[in-house]
Length: 215
Image (cartoon, rainbow, N blue to C red; front, side, top):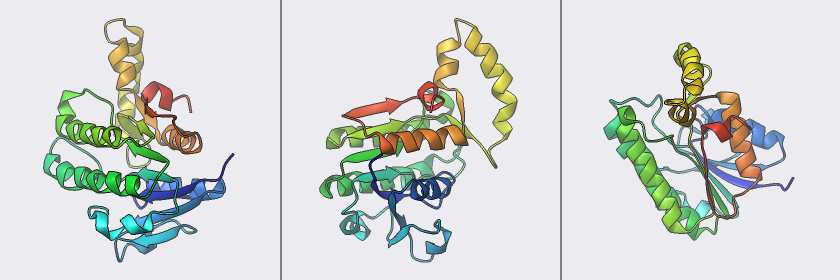
């Protein structure tokens, strides 16, 4: 397995704070972006880069010599009421990250998007879809992961929906939708991210819930 030199945004978040220790444990070099005063929230062992993920100029010059860029910035606990926050944080961060990564010569960009379409979260999906479009237009080799909901600590209420999903997957009329909007566990999501990072896409690949569950 080749060692990756990884630049990560959102490293103090729900997924990021769990992903970084696993990357370090597998021998990868990790440099994580954090705002001034938030350095202590990052996992021990990673290199800290001070900057603002919404302002390209604050971190663009510190991406090199990384070869992999992992974009995890996002509003915590997304809901249909947070449309303005999605545009102010999620969208502005990807607008900053993509050109910065391209200018730094990043070989592989990893982005956590969301499964779509799903009308109840149309604002969130619109923002993440725009993020995907920006990455595609940049020409960067990229892996796009599209979970719908990640089950794990603090994210347990959807477990009550699991039996319903199982039923819908058995019915021809709802099978495709149930699989596309399937729930994935935190462990499955971390495994899928590790696989994507260690096995860079040749071009632009999208990894949907059924593929996430296989990792």
